[in-house]
Image 1 (tube, rainbow, N blue to C red):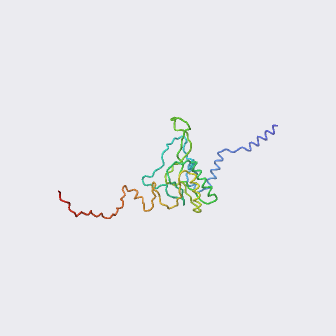
Image 2 (image 1 turned 135 degrees about the vertical axis):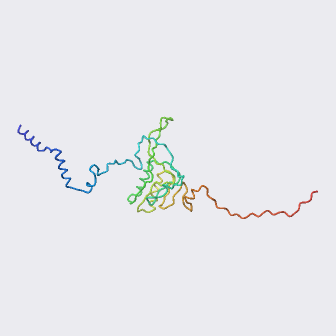
Length: 247
């Protein structure tokens, strides 16, 4: 029994790891042999990889606390001559809302996105989203009395201004196929929508810059109207008959 214990003790001694100091010396000596341009340029205290945390969130749900209350607000109204968001930038075709500004929920935008992807399944294209859901909607339950706070979080939404483009698409697709995909997506979204091609004139408010209308003309406080050319009116004819003498 004693001999077996001694044999086991000797086996464990053979598996004992050497001290860490020896390992460090071995690594330092081996690292000196391998020289790289990165190691020579970078300082020993600088990391060779990014330590920045990845940002959470997407275009449907931002990285904002749901407990942070938000005001309802109103969509942007371009009163200073801005044409931002009314033209196609990255794609070849776009889907633009033309009737009235409103707030669109993330569920409705997701449904429209899935509809476009389902219609264009198997095709080579790229879909761009021009809006992001960054507005939290808070509601109270039914039959709740006034007061007692704003309510609980319900869903995320996006404020979409009038004549703003929501989706853009680019790819090796026929125009009729894209038109049909945007038609199906417009049926899933509230409001009226239209297909926009790249290069079409922008829109200021509700006025499209076409038919000779320029941005400088809209910025003028008073626009001169063309003078109406009318024919001169002849003077009234004088009567030649004399008045009868008084009796």
